[in-house]
Length: 267
Image 1 (cartoon, helix red, strand yellow):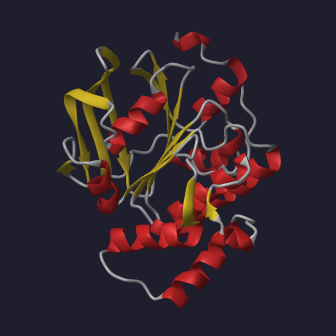
Image 2: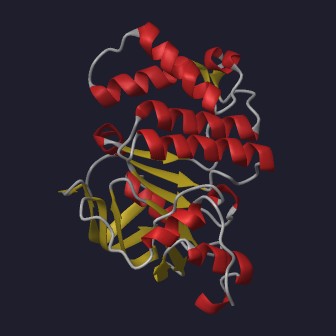
């Protein structure tokens, strides 16, 4: 069956087909085994993401997709029992989540938490200062924040509201992408960022991800079971995770196959 050509991610991956990935790897996951409690969830995962590459991780519910994201960020609940994680050539398998974030890693949460008493503006400003190790000029920061909020079609008043308090699901996801754009991580993980969003909100969040691709050129891992957020994005590689193992990898056309036929042939 011939898959019809599309604009955005599909057109981009057509140019990549048959080409080798870039050599400047930003993330290398080697034979990673991860436990939650006494149960092993990931069974020897290998994954390499280069700078300025966008990878998509798909799989059925319970496959271990979010486990990989949390393990990459160092969540202590997810214990690495074998293998290692290299970030920009350095083994970070034992590093704390704060250290990984300072080094340039970022995870967008499925269900962002509310933080009463801390405004969105101050929360992001604190994160930027921790990431850079220096105080930032407030007016320049505020101008950039306003510009990024426009990209995400966010009401400017949200900047002074307590983080995620009273935010709709869509505004919470936009706030996560706003943090990514302001922190400028060299590697970002988006975990089910499009879940629970309507079509318009998905399109807006996708615009924010496009802005990251164009302006920051970092590595990006998009964890999803949906394809809506991918419609207009440049995708370099797609991976299928089933029962804690990556069972297939390909280019953006693999997304189209899964969208049409599901995961049945991988089970």
